[in-house]
Image (cartoon, rainbow, N blue to C red):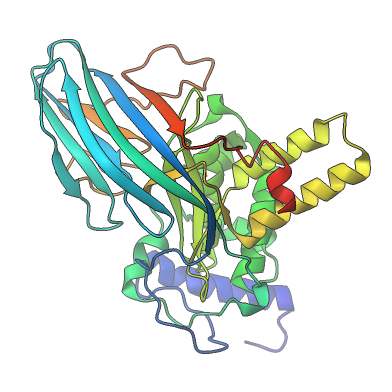
Length: 392
């Protein structure tokens, strides 16, 4: 780098160089390695410290109404999988009024699994029901930024989590803006903390502005949205810096208008994939700030603890992961790639049915809707509303 360049100019030139590789996909993002790291694996199980399991009896149904005279209605129902954080048992499927046995499929990029249903000439609404038991643990990573290793070159398996796609779009606008969000890159953990802080200050939580597609572009344009827009934008900024990121979708197993909720994951060796919930942390801190029963000092303490929990990695036992990743082909193939799958993906004669958001008070028409009941094995507090979990 020419000695006449300022530190900021040098940083800009380095980013521009990385961007030229990114656009052409000639190579994956590169960083200087500071120390040896364990084998990098994009399919690596989560490695945080788990605790506090809760078992839920789950009865989940989707009611799908195809347009009049539909010849073929295709539905992909996302299936949660057992892993180190959650265990799935006793899956039972049923349909009404037409009786079908689903085909179980798995897409190859992210490993998401689906129950696939194909209805011929459906008359009126079709109901798909999935009953199962899920045991979910809380997980914490306790990230120490000083221990997060730099990576010289990411293996090819990380490419889906480094490249731009139709949801997590890393375009010229994102590349330029990330220079302001992270003016001086230090390490992945601190850089992601800066990204999450910036997004928290930039965006307003609003279902009416949500894309339902984890759209970074929607988040930047509207400065508002719901969980997927927050996390799609964070993921785009992370990828712009060369860090593997992804949006993961799942269910909150308690009564709410829309059961689906997503989180952000970033790969931070040696911790592996780490989970973050930016939108719910923002809503929690805003609630704390508005609470007139709390003294100013107590508010400051709780807000600090909430942000610290976010930055150190936290996944709650009131969230069941179903899918990960954005902009991928379903199996069997749908007419178009799925931007995300929240609960189901449905298309009638090759046309995708619009995603519903019953938490959006302005939305009145739905091509499909979910019906759900959850029975926990014990009383469990949602950790983004109750504050006891902050002082663990």
